[in-house]
Amino acid sequence: MIIEQIFTSPGHNYFGHFDRAPDSFPLEEQTEIECVAGHGIRGDRFFDFRDDYQGQITFFARDVFLELAKTFGLTNKSPGILRRNVIVSGVQLNDLIGAEFELQGVQFFGTAHCKPCAWMDIACAPGAEKFLARQGGLRARIVTDGRIRVGDARLQVSRALA
Image (cartoon, helix red, strand yellow):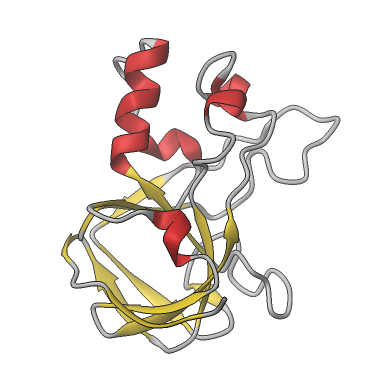
């Protein structure tokens, strides 16, 4: 598995903006982030968002973004438009739902599919929400403190729940 890109943002542009226009908090590409168990990514908008929040960190597959970009002609957009934290290759993210896994010494628990919202049609292209229906990424809880960085990341799945 490879961690291709990492993104954080200090605020919510779309989350919770049901009847409002999006905000304009910058998306910041990182080479390394600090994961804090039970809290989230230090400096990210979901840090300490809510107790036991299932989306303390989010993952998204690079190959899905490439297919999205090809389908909708997104020639000048980054995977960051999806507002997921960690862009990866070499893993089926839905297989990690209900599993404990480790990357670069940090343990996570895959909590749920990261269901795309209607704003995907605004941020990406009309039809993006439907396109991403079963491949919107992975929400996870951070189980142990540590740092992850862009580059090779040996994925170790320690326990999968049935």
